[in-house]
Image 1 (tube, each protein chain N blue to C red):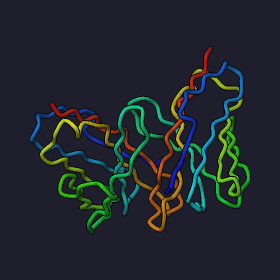
Image 2 (image 1 turned 45 degrees about the horizontal axis):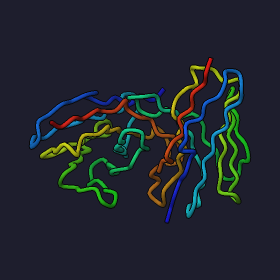
Image 3 (image 1 turned 60 degrees about the vertical axis):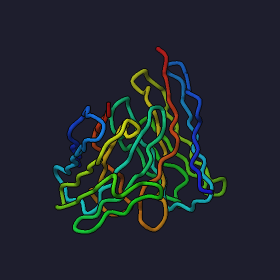
Length: 116
Length: 112
């Protein structure tokens, strides 16, 4: 089955530093990947749509300079949280489709970011 | 405004009973609706997809209904087991970009 690998699973960083999260589709190519954010006991909030070879599309209220997305190949998208602050602490999850636009999303196992 | 709402209260049921979870949406006209399961600290896992022209979809102990007039989907787990305890999320497409928007999720706890 389609597998999405996300790394790291947990990261703790100091305020002001940047953190990069990787999302890989292991056995399929993904022209589009989606980045979500989830706060405790809340649902997934879509942050941005990552498009291979072009700029990401950000949802309203998401700072593109804060959350840098790069989708350099058909199997890798990265999310960089720049100049992280404690309020950026959250669970970040990436996902991708293995088929057409109506097919389900396959999710990575998420990255727990804690900014101290 | 657009909303996707699920029971915010946790659903506690006894093992062997049928769990029924509700997903209501407003100001969307989705061509399909999906259900996912999420365990703590993990990414969601896809369960079922139902299209707008389908009234019902089944997969093993799972059943989903989709009523586009009521703008509602029901998710049933029959003969529930403690291993079914998780958060269940409904999701539907959010516009022309085929991005998936998730509901608030319902925590299901099946007691042995």
